[in-house]
Image (cartoon, rainbow, N blue to C red; front, top):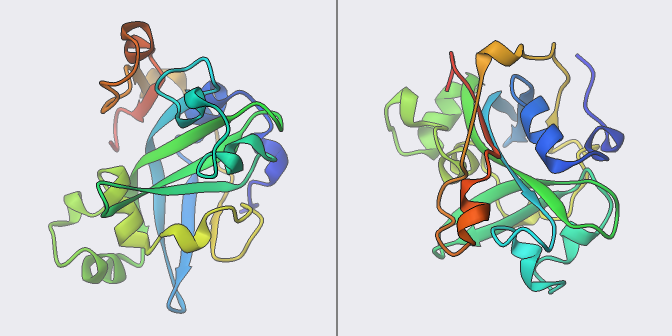
Length: 191
Protein backbone atom coordinates (compact mmCIF):
# COMPACT_ATOMS: atom_id res chain seq x y z
CA UNK A 1 0.00 0.00 0.00
CA UNK A 2 1.06 3.58 -0.47
CA UNK A 3 1.49 5.91 2.47
CA UNK A 4 -0.55 9.05 2.94
CA UNK A 5 1.71 12.05 2.49
CA UNK A 6 1.48 15.54 3.91
CA UNK A 7 -0.54 16.81 0.94
CA UNK A 8 -3.40 14.44 1.84
CA UNK A 9 -3.89 16.50 5.02
CA UNK A 10 -3.94 19.88 3.24
CA UNK A 11 -7.74 19.88 3.44
CA UNK A 12 -10.42 20.86 5.92
CA UNK A 13 -10.33 18.77 9.12
CA UNK A 14 -13.95 17.66 8.73
CA UNK A 15 -13.24 16.18 5.28
CA UNK A 16 -10.03 14.54 6.45
CA UNK A 17 -11.68 13.12 9.59
CA UNK A 18 -14.37 11.44 7.52
CA UNK A 19 -11.91 10.23 4.86
CA UNK A 20 -9.47 8.67 7.37
CA UNK A 21 -12.04 6.02 8.28
CA UNK A 22 -10.86 2.66 6.97
CA UNK A 23 -7.23 3.78 6.58
CA UNK A 24 -4.47 1.77 8.29
CA UNK A 25 -2.47 3.48 11.05
CA UNK A 26 0.84 1.72 11.67
CA UNK A 27 3.62 2.11 14.20
CA UNK A 28 7.03 0.52 14.37
CA UNK A 29 7.40 -0.14 18.10
CA UNK A 30 10.44 -1.98 19.52
CA UNK A 31 11.18 -3.44 16.09
CA UNK A 32 7.66 -4.77 15.65
CA UNK A 33 4.85 -3.49 13.46
CA UNK A 34 1.63 -2.69 15.35
CA UNK A 35 -1.51 -1.03 14.12
CA UNK A 36 -4.97 -1.30 12.74
CA UNK A 37 -7.76 0.30 10.78
CA UNK A 38 -9.05 3.73 11.85
CA UNK A 39 -12.68 3.34 12.91
CA UNK A 40 -13.39 6.62 14.73
CA UNK A 41 -12.18 10.22 14.38
CA UNK A 42 -13.11 13.77 15.41
CA UNK A 43 -12.45 17.07 13.65
CA UNK A 44 -11.34 20.29 15.37
CA UNK A 45 -11.48 23.38 13.17
CA UNK A 46 -9.64 26.54 14.07
CA UNK A 47 -9.84 29.40 16.50
CA UNK A 48 -13.60 29.83 16.04
CA UNK A 49 -14.28 26.25 17.19
CA UNK A 50 -14.51 26.53 20.99
CA UNK A 51 -13.79 22.79 21.29
CA UNK A 52 -10.45 23.22 19.50
CA UNK A 53 -7.30 23.82 21.55
CA UNK A 54 -6.51 26.73 19.23
CA UNK A 55 -9.67 28.58 20.28
CA UNK A 56 -7.53 30.49 22.78
CA UNK A 57 -4.98 31.38 20.12
CA UNK A 58 -1.42 30.36 19.50
CA UNK A 59 0.39 28.97 22.52
CA UNK A 60 3.48 26.83 23.04
CA UNK A 61 1.16 23.81 23.20
CA UNK A 62 -0.84 24.62 20.04
CA UNK A 63 2.02 25.99 17.93
CA UNK A 64 2.18 22.74 15.94
CA UNK A 65 -1.46 23.20 14.85
CA UNK A 66 -0.52 26.45 13.11
CA UNK A 67 2.22 24.73 11.10
CA UNK A 68 2.22 22.64 7.97
CA UNK A 69 -0.40 19.92 7.61
CA UNK A 70 0.56 16.28 7.98
CA UNK A 71 2.32 16.58 11.34
CA UNK A 72 1.35 14.89 14.59
CA UNK A 73 -0.08 16.94 17.44
CA UNK A 74 0.19 14.78 20.54
CA UNK A 75 -0.72 15.97 24.00
CA UNK A 76 -1.34 14.52 27.43
CA UNK A 77 -4.69 14.74 29.24
CA UNK A 78 -5.39 14.05 32.90
CA UNK A 79 -1.63 13.68 33.30
CA UNK A 80 -1.77 10.13 31.95
CA UNK A 81 -3.38 9.69 28.49
CA UNK A 82 -1.76 10.69 25.22
CA UNK A 83 -4.00 11.86 22.38
CA UNK A 84 -2.97 11.48 18.73
CA UNK A 85 -4.04 14.23 16.34
CA UNK A 86 -2.94 15.03 12.81
CA UNK A 87 -2.68 18.67 11.72
CA UNK A 88 -4.80 19.48 8.65
CA UNK A 89 -5.73 22.47 6.49
CA UNK A 90 -3.49 25.29 5.44
CA UNK A 91 -0.54 26.56 7.40
CA UNK A 92 -1.57 29.36 9.75
CA UNK A 93 -5.15 28.06 10.16
CA UNK A 94 -5.10 25.59 13.07
CA UNK A 95 -7.05 22.40 12.45
CA UNK A 96 -6.53 18.80 13.51
CA UNK A 97 -8.14 15.38 13.46
CA UNK A 98 -8.17 13.30 16.64
CA UNK A 99 -7.79 9.57 16.02
CA UNK A 100 -10.32 8.12 18.49
CA UNK A 101 -10.29 4.37 17.83
CA UNK A 102 -8.69 1.59 15.81
CA UNK A 103 -9.66 -1.94 14.87
CA UNK A 104 -6.41 -3.80 15.77
CA UNK A 105 -4.88 -5.86 12.98
CA UNK A 106 -1.12 -6.15 13.42
CA UNK A 107 1.05 -6.76 16.46
CA UNK A 108 -1.89 -7.67 18.66
CA UNK A 109 0.30 -9.56 21.16
CA UNK A 110 2.45 -6.43 21.55
CA UNK A 111 -0.69 -4.33 22.04
CA UNK A 112 -1.96 -6.74 24.71
CA UNK A 113 1.34 -6.43 26.55
CA UNK A 114 1.32 -2.61 26.36
CA UNK A 115 -2.32 -2.48 27.51
CA UNK A 116 -1.81 -4.83 30.45
CA UNK A 117 -3.73 -7.81 29.12
CA UNK A 118 -7.13 -6.18 28.61
CA UNK A 119 -9.71 -7.89 26.41
CA UNK A 120 -9.02 -7.49 22.68
CA UNK A 121 -12.10 -5.31 22.14
CA UNK A 122 -10.63 -2.88 24.70
CA UNK A 123 -7.19 -2.58 23.10
CA UNK A 124 -7.80 0.50 20.93
CA UNK A 125 -11.41 1.56 21.55
CA UNK A 126 -10.52 5.04 22.77
CA UNK A 127 -7.92 7.69 21.95
CA UNK A 128 -5.82 7.14 25.08
CA UNK A 129 -6.08 3.37 24.77
CA UNK A 130 -4.88 3.32 21.16
CA UNK A 131 -1.92 5.53 22.03
CA UNK A 132 -0.98 3.17 24.85
CA UNK A 133 -1.43 0.09 22.63
CA UNK A 134 0.79 1.56 19.90
CA UNK A 135 3.34 3.14 22.24
CA UNK A 136 2.51 6.66 21.05
CA UNK A 137 3.65 9.49 23.30
CA UNK A 138 4.87 13.08 23.10
CA UNK A 139 8.19 11.97 21.62
CA UNK A 140 6.30 11.86 18.29
CA UNK A 141 4.77 15.34 18.70
CA UNK A 142 5.59 17.49 15.69
CA UNK A 143 6.84 14.62 13.54
CA UNK A 144 5.69 14.29 9.95
CA UNK A 145 3.38 11.57 8.65
CA UNK A 146 6.20 10.93 6.17
CA UNK A 147 8.35 9.51 8.99
CA UNK A 148 9.11 5.86 9.67
CA UNK A 149 7.95 5.54 13.30
CA UNK A 150 4.23 6.21 12.76
CA UNK A 151 2.39 6.47 9.45
CA UNK A 152 -0.91 6.06 7.64
CA UNK A 153 -1.54 4.03 4.52
CA UNK A 154 -4.04 4.59 1.78
CA UNK A 155 -7.03 2.30 1.36
CA UNK A 156 -10.22 2.30 -0.65
CA UNK A 157 -12.70 5.00 0.40
CA UNK A 158 -15.44 3.92 2.80
CA UNK A 159 -18.98 4.24 1.45
CA UNK A 160 -21.22 6.81 3.15
CA UNK A 161 -23.69 4.10 4.19
CA UNK A 162 -20.97 2.55 6.40
CA UNK A 163 -20.29 5.83 8.29
CA UNK A 164 -22.04 7.50 11.20
CA UNK A 165 -21.58 11.16 12.10
CA UNK A 166 -22.48 12.71 15.44
CA UNK A 167 -21.42 15.20 18.09
CA UNK A 168 -17.91 15.11 19.49
CA UNK A 169 -17.50 13.79 23.02
CA UNK A 170 -15.74 15.11 26.12
CA UNK A 171 -16.02 18.79 25.14
CA UNK A 172 -18.35 20.15 27.82
CA UNK A 173 -16.26 23.34 27.93
CA UNK A 174 -17.24 24.23 24.34
CA UNK A 175 -20.19 26.39 23.29
CA UNK A 176 -23.51 24.53 22.94
CA UNK A 177 -23.36 25.03 19.17
CA UNK A 178 -19.85 23.57 18.94
CA UNK A 179 -20.81 20.67 21.20
CA UNK A 180 -23.53 19.68 18.73
CA UNK A 181 -21.49 19.81 15.52
CA UNK A 182 -21.57 16.35 13.84
CA UNK A 183 -17.79 16.16 13.55
CA UNK A 184 -17.26 12.72 15.11
CA UNK A 185 -17.14 10.00 12.48
CA UNK A 186 -17.21 6.23 12.97
CA UNK A 187 -17.44 3.08 10.91
CA UNK A 188 -20.68 1.22 11.61
CA UNK A 189 -19.27 -2.29 11.18
CA UNK A 190 -15.89 -2.12 12.98
CA UNK A 191 -16.31 0.60 15.64
